[in-house]
Amino acid sequence: MPNKILVIGACGQIGTELTMKLRSLYGNDNVIGADIREGNKELMQSGPFEILDAMDREKVSQVCESQKVDEVYLMAAMLSATGEKFPDKAWKLNMDSLFIVLDLAKEGKIKKVFWPSSIAVFGPTTPKEQTPQHTIMEPTTVYGISKQTGERWCEYYHRKYGVDVRSIRYPGLISWKTLPGGGTTDYAVEIFHKAIKEGTYSCFLSKDTALPMMYMEDAIRATVDIMKAPAENIKERSSYNLSGMSFTPQEMARFIEKHLPDFEITYEPDSRQQIADSWPSSIDDRQARADWNWSAAYDLEKTVAEMLQHLS
Ligand SMILES: NC(=O)c1ccc[n+]([C@@H]2O[C@H](COP(=O)([O-])OP(=O)(O)OC[C@H]3O[C@@H](n4cnc5c(N)ncnc54)[C@H](O)[C@@H]3O)[C@@H](O)[C@H]2O)c1
Image 1 (tube, rainbow, N blue to C red):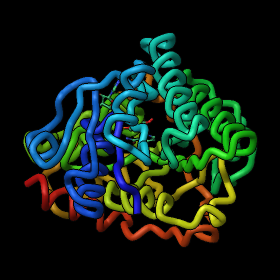
Image 2 (cartoon, rainbow, N blue to C red):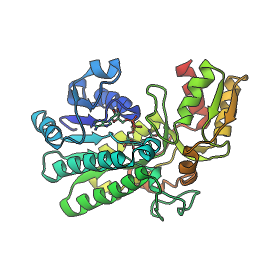
Image 3 (cartoon, rainbow, N blue to C red):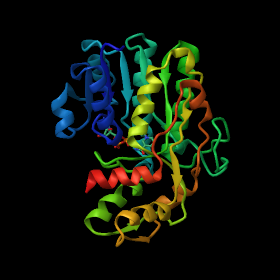
C-alpha cells in the first residue's frame, strides 16, 4: 500500500473521480489532489489539495518531497481537440509534465507513476477494427504525437532506469460527475445533458462514426487495478490497449430514445470528424486481460441507463 499519493490534474474529467476513489481506498489524508485550478466542492473538501503547475519542476518536486509522496498519477494534459488549436502549448504541457514526473522516479524520489495514454496514438494507417496492442502507429494530431512519444519515453525510463511506470490507452470516457475537457469523444457525454435539458442534440461527428469508448467506472477500476498489480505482471511498459465498448452516435441515440422517446439527434460534423476518422473503431485488449486480469463491466445499454439515471 502506498504511503502518499499525488494526483496532478485532479480537477479534470478523470482526475476528479480517480482522486475520490483513491481517497476511499487509501484514506482521505493520504491522497493529495493537485491542479492548476480549483475543482468541485466534494474534491476540495474531502482531502488535501495543492494549486500546482505540472510544468513547474521545482514545485512538483517540493510537494513530493515535503509530503513524502510515493505514487504520482499524472492526469494533467491538453486533449485532442483543444490541442489542435494550440499545438505548441499541447506539446509543451504533455511532454514537460511527463519528464518532470519520470525524472522524480528516476532519482528515486517517488516509487511509482501512472501516466495515461490514449487511442489517439493510432492513426489512419493503423488497422481500424480490433486494433492490436502492437501495430502501426502514425498519429496525425499533436495530442496523439505527444502520447505516442510519451509511451516511448515511459518504456525507455523503465528499461534504462528501472522506473515503475504504468499506463493505459484510454478510449473515450463517458461520465456524469465531471464534464469532458476538450476531446474528440466529448459528444458521448454532451448528448446526455442536451437530451435531458432540451430533448435534442446536434452531434459534431457523423452518425456512423464508430469509436472505442468506456464508462468512467470501468476506467477508474482499470487505473486502480493496473497500479495494484505486481510489477512482474506489467509486461507492457509503454501503454496497454483497453477496450470497453464501441458504438456510433446513431447507436447511442437509439439507446437514449428507449428512455426518452421524443429525443431527436442531428449531425453537423466539424473539424473533430477528421480526428475521429483517423482513430480505431474497436480495440483488442487481450494483453491487459492476460497480464492484469482486465475486463470491462459496462456495455452501451448499461452505460446509457446509468447516465440518464444519474443526470435526470
Ligand atoms: N477523458 C478521456 O476521454 C481521455 C481519453 C484518453 C486519454 N485521456 C487522458 O487522461 C488524462 C486526463 O484526462 P481528462 O479527460 O481528465 O482531462 P481534463 O481536461 O478533463 O483534465 C485535465 C486537468 O488537468 C489540469 N491541468 C491543465 N494544465 C495543467 C497544469 N499545467 N498543471 C496542473 N494541472 C493542469 C486541468 O485544469 C484539468 O483539471 C489526460 O492525460 C488525457 O490525455 C483522457
